[in-house]
Length: 193
Picture 1 (cartoon, rainbow, N blue to C red):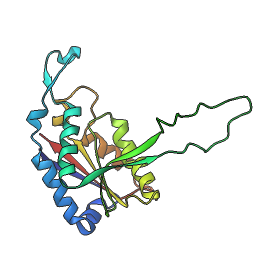
Picture 2 (spheres, rainbow, N blue to C red):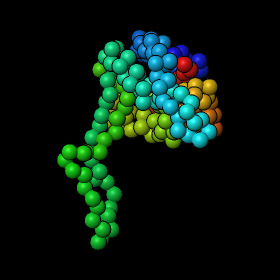
Picture 3 (tube, one colour):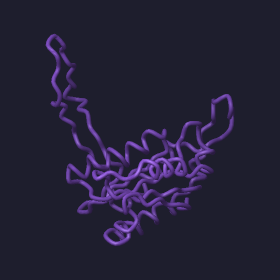
Picture 4 (spheres, rainbow, N blue to C red):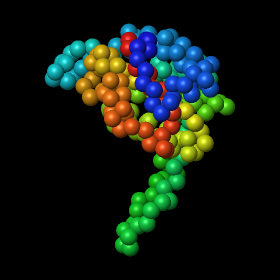
């Protein structure tokens, strides 16, 4: 795979290049090492693409996980304690069992570094959530101070199931949204097979 585009959100590009240049080189190496052709395994059942062989987001995510692990990047999970808000009299909220505590996680963080990486081959809302909410939450928790979001460009997304979002629309929306004072610096990388 290769990086074919980038979007600099809130100064993310310069922060990544100055503060995390070694980690950025590793991320570029991870992307380059993934053979996307091995992930073209999903046979479409969609009417508009019946029987067409597409890239599998699950297989792509497994490949990224394996490659990032080789470079000592790991998933970071935070258990959520939902104790906020006030319930009205007469309403009894359900409680989570001890075996299934709710959590938020960041796809990849390197030990001792405050750079978070998210890889997203899903719906548009997840890309926006990652950059505009999740990365801010993880910064507030002291886990990261900068982020990288890896997403497919349109040409690559067109070879996946319908509904997979892509770099071009994501960058346009972020540009129109603007930057808020709570936003984390994020470098968004558009990748293609």
